[in-house]
Length: 232
Image (spheres, rainbow, N blue to C red):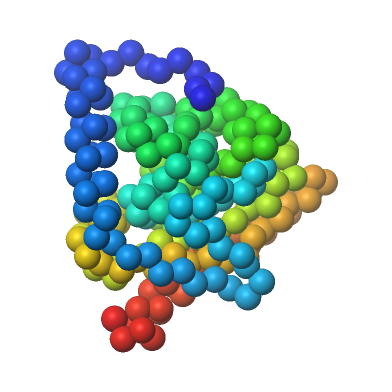
């Protein structure tokens, strides 16, 4: 699914787009076979398990730093993710499609309205939409308004989760991007869903965004604490 035409790229960029997604997919697939996912959830939450089909007409959010383990855990789910229309976004889209995802192009900074309308159509047709809540440029651990607006438009609940590797390489990027090491455990931590009423007043958008932010942070901090409790 694409809601806008892809930007034009240089010959070098097109070559990268032709080669890199396949190489990353192959490497990630091999390494991910050594990962072990362990699921925790807040009371009352029914988590999605590895390999399960994502629930229909729902929105899911996670922090940008855990894109890699999320890509593997939710592979084949058929979920649609909002990705920027930049070259980097095109590269990520190519990789995600090889894992069974689809993409709507847009972001909080470019093509936001087009992206939201595209995800709205996904929800209306019974699909599942995914946001990297603090992407594409941060600041880290601060969700944008996009998920709140989409939930208000569609009535879909927002599920919040975080995937934290016990051992990972942490990139020197704004999001502290996580690359799980081979043979590591990965905690899949679920928080309670956030619901947004259709009649949400303008002054209540920020408190609702903070509510979603708190849910995502609870999921992340519980994942970090999990390995301490487990003796990791």
